[in-house]
Length: 236
Image 1 (cartoon, rainbow, N blue to C red):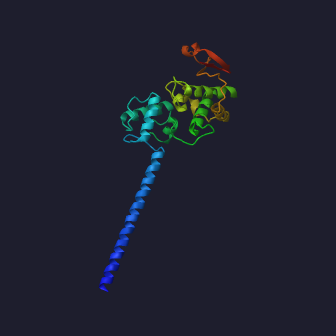
Image 2: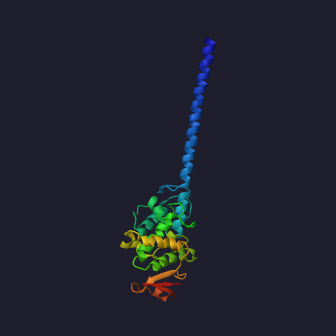
Image 3: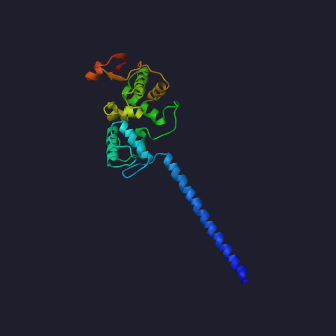
């Protein structure tokens, strides 16, 4: 009986150890799975953060002219300062932390595709927001034309290669800093954004537009006008 009890106790100990080991392995696998999911979706990045998300943020800020450092994936003081400047220019909380709203404004906040396979839902929303702020009082054709100009800039080598890059390029669109930016987006602007994304370009391929009644900018007045729609002149 003594030998039997010893064997039984030994087996019980081994089973218990096996349960503990299995639990550890399963827990480890669960942790790895969460880590992998974290790597594929954007989270909050701030001073001290590292990784591929930080690199994406640095590349975007560099293309917009806010960041001059190396794309090293390290969220240092230079990256924080660039994020803060970008936030200030966009009129959002300038805390130097790249959270959900800042990522959205950078065009890094969503991966769901819209009706256009080339642009995300956040791109469509941003395009509609600009159209609404810039051309709320214009005809529908004029609203689509404003959207088309932004898309023409995306394709043009002299401008950033994303909608967010074009919209938030320093000094490009004054509407991002005025009260119109915070008004509800007009339904017509949402439709106009999608029409522009689907290829309608009433601007005639223009990469500039301006209201001659509201600007004395000599550069804008010097551009060759290709189309006039409402109060806007569209130029090359």
